[in-house]
Image: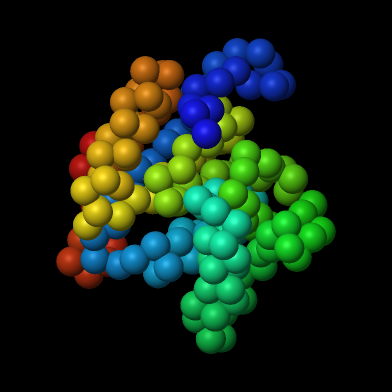
Length: 163
């Protein structure tokens, strides 16, 4: 994918994106992602979630319908269509058909972070390869001049800022 730090289509410059790295240790992505997406929608923002494969996109799509019985998190994927109407768009590519301001990276993916206001990079802290890939993305984002923060899960599943 390798699109970190590319020029913005709108200005031709390298904008600064706030990128938060989320080190998942206690709760899996399937628990953390819906909570962060709920906060995104509460803030009045739209989101794109990039996953590692079409199969992973559809697994996340199904999970978001069932993660919390009474809750409803509006979302969709290429399979669902109507991208422009979806507050949360799930993809395995670099598309942003819903005009999202927030980007969520999963499965050690990178993406066009400079095209977004904020980026959330969620990685599995129990997988050494995922941790190393996150370190590489951190270095690339730092070199590109983005504003970085690092969040680690607490024992209760909340988040503590470490950097």
